[in-house]
Image (cartoon, rainbow, N blue to C red; front, side, top):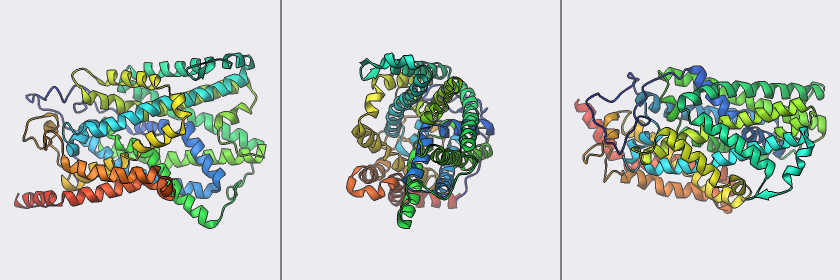
Length: 488
């Protein structure tokens, strides 16, 4: 059923929200100043990073050619675009962040379950992404200033002196940006998204010139059978869905600041199917060019920039990769836990305080040690990541199918028994009945080696199974709602 687009909501002046459920950051957004370019730049910040570059380049090395990678990831980004629009519509219509949106389906207290799951994943990846950026910076600093090698001879808590300097510097810059609030986030990602495009285009021109402007888009360094190509093609779609399933879950954190739903759709269109696919093409072209020039496919752009041999290029590259990682970190791994932690204790934790807690936690977990332990990354973060699909499935079915887009925003800030989002002691048991078993299924698919062939599809499996199960559990509730609408 279609959902109308009413004017952005605000709490009534005479309404007194429960202080345990609200603060200025969790209430419906007052200023709606995120335009199409802001959302477009948000996606540039999120997509233009070392992880996505390496992911696309890695598919080339595994046996897919450039055209296969392009079509697979374009299909994935179209699906992601649809999912982002669905969550984006909720945020734009009601003006509230993800933990408050979660109250619609999980209850005013039960919303802390999806919020904290998302927060823990984001905090861990916040630290890991900062560490990966510091490694890229170190590679280029050592190439530009060889005498810094002496700074790598001794380590403390698993990180050498140069690593500490690079990591802490990036960590402090991000903390400074974050401490200024969401408006600072908007301005920063407006800058860093386009800036990375310029650097990547320059790298592509350099590689193509070295290759004599002739590279093959139909060959691969490791040819595989046709059957294996099909498996990798669908696997690439599944993996890109899992990658963006994190931000798809809390995209309402950003769309809540858009003046209209058309703005959300246009920003997402230019930022996802168009920009993201273009970045994938650029990544693969550069990797194919490196194969032509150096005889090997170089999937790490930091190593490729280091081969340029010019000190100023190395410095520029180090800055570019640092800015790229800060962009994706702030968009994908900071905003969410800042709101999620604020939701736990709104009276004491604001968006800025939640952000500072997140940044400190990301440092204290020593992310370089986490990243060096495959079991932690795979079983802990991978297991938690598998829960995101079931959460998305429950929330989408509840909002669009069960409640038909009808939400009493003021009641989201009320813990009165009898309130529509109080459910049973503040928790919706139906949402948990749908989430828990399907999250277990998704986790098994993602982590158990026996199911390795379906592991790339764990997010999709979790989303689909939770959506179907929740719809079955709530079918009587929806029927009752349909009867009430008919009587009206």
